[in-house]
Image (cartoon, rainbow, N blue to C red; front, side, top):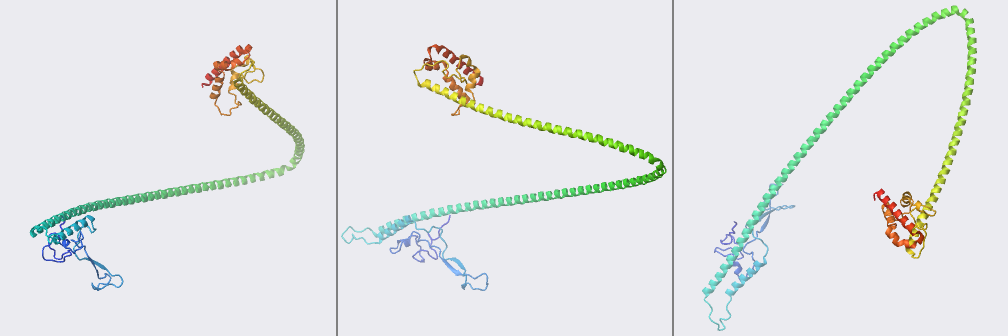
Length: 452
């Protein structure tokens, strides 16, 4: 633990306002002076710094007290040993100091009641004893505070040392990690360089192999060409030999023909005449065949022209039939739309008008028919075509399931008989009731068929 030597001992050079003294002094004695301005930290002196010009490193002969003309170098020399206590003015310390001064002044001030005939003052020794007790108590409090501050400084120093140790360990760990990272990077770089060299060696080996293969192929090609050239030369020599032999043979034959030419002229003349006659007959036969071929070609051309005209006529007829079919489908679609519209209007009239007397064929049966509907027209196929017709208007985008459910709600026997049977003529009520039940049967069959 750090102990301040200025507290209970007399320093050689006092830091107190009272100046140097050879007698023992208390750390609060200067505070008890009535004319002293109180400061809670007056018992210690802040280290005063003197700036002295030091010799420059550039010129070794500069004296210590010589000031550099350009850049004077300052040397810090503390006048007194530094005190580790804080230097700020604590408000609580100020209050305590002011109380000490006030107590001291009270002990030294004369009592005004003595001159006014009050009781005799107390003994001076007792007063001094009380003052000394107060001083000792205050000194003890100050000493306790100094001890606490010293403990706090020790703890702070220990904390700083621990933090410095932690920082050192952290720096060592960071340095170690950086070194490991550098080693890993160097190892990675070496591996990459080794891989690059390996790839370069492989590439050079591959190029060398390709070059050797090209040289081998070139050598083989040269050998093949040489063999072909030798074969060609042998073939040419063989042909020249054959030609020479042939020329000799022709020469012998020519001599023989010259010997026989006279005898052969007449025979050749006869052969020529027969050949010319044969050629003439051949030309006449070819001319007849060509004329026949031209006639056949013209006939085929005319036949193709007739077939093309017939196909064109068929295309025009097919286009006309397609146009008529589309017009018929359009008229049929318009008729279906009007039929569905008329059925919806009939249903709306049945719901809106109470006093009606309709016949059997006047009801909106689910059958695509432009004439009067009878009982035999209400079949499963007709009901299916009416309900699931692709040209049926569907502005709300209903599904087949929703359309079938709507028709089943319309033709439900109980609802239909209760709502619309009274609006049918009495003679047709039984027929209408049976037909409505049949429609419901077909709708149930459609539901089972579509698995809705």
